[in-house]
Length: 350
Image (cartoon, rainbow, N blue to C red):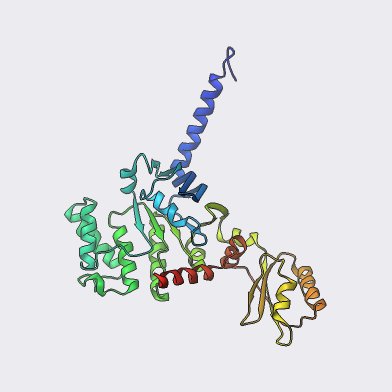
């Protein structure tokens, strides 16, 4: 209510309310991102991105190559300045309080950032000194991390003799030397064998159970499904979906229908009959069509009727629950495997 013809009390109340809400956000969430924008010349990479990450949870950031995932990580970790918007890490602004933010975070990029001519132990000691830890703390944390990451036996070998999985584990260990409450992981298991990947998953789960907050980007849908409390799908610099794994799966239907087309029928013709369905996926080699169904038996009847009218013989029909890969395809128009293969091709060309 305004008094004596002025609206100052209303404005004051509004300002106090906004400040209270802002403070609540900062207390509850380790990461707060508001209206984040970033462009490189004429290319808009982030276009008004907003999200929060609750303390002690894992947020997975999914999206096609070039969607803005790594750019987001770089801004949040103070390696890149945003064009506009605000990012708060435990209440500290990444632009105004960059040094403080760096003391609160750990970062593991897509490629191990290690000195290959030093031993694993020496790499940990070096980063500990850069963090200005005491000699006693460096020694204690080094032994703890070598044990945690199963690197004790290899600790006195030079990193250039390490396998890919060992290097990734050491890289994550290095980012934890100062016990940061928040960790950014940019595709942490890319290129790892199944055993090394499971070890990394176990370590990440242990970190979260001890109260660490983690934001990770990944192309591995199983990884996001297994680790993330919440998932954000980003495409074209904008968030197009957000929720738990189950919530995202429910958005695209209750089940996925798999139809095998008989060898006597034209597979190309079968694809054209139901190509208007945005969730359609086809496998030319296996001669299967797959689509999300929300209409149950009625929708199945309609699809089979259309195929029958077109003279297409169906060999087999099955159904399964939708996966995150189905979500990714439906929302972005790409499968996770498409993105992985494109990235591999790009690396080979380099």
